[in-house]
Length: 80
Image 1 (cartoon, helix red, strand yellow):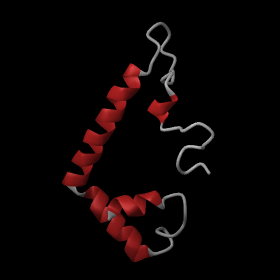
Image 2 (image 1 turned 90 degrees about the vertical axis):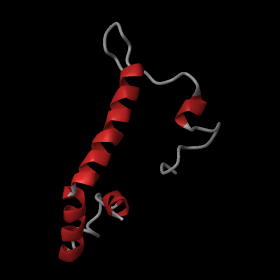
Image 3 (image 1 turned 45 degrees about the vertical axis):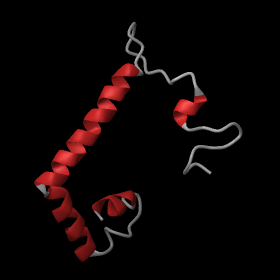
Image 4 (image 1 turned 30 degrees about the horizontal axis):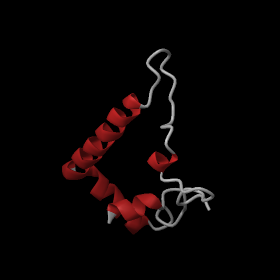
């Protein structure tokens, strides 16, 4: 449930409801949530290091558009 509420962080839907905001904060403060987020971020950090140019530390994208989930002529999900 907390993940769904986190998706709304760019809106005032959750922040405008004190009880819902408090619920989200309690969920995010739980040790299990903290561990899950740390594990999740660790995967992205490992992936990011493989997408870095070793010479200068410049991020690069995979050359295959399929790696990005892009189908020819379509915008990535959420960018339409």
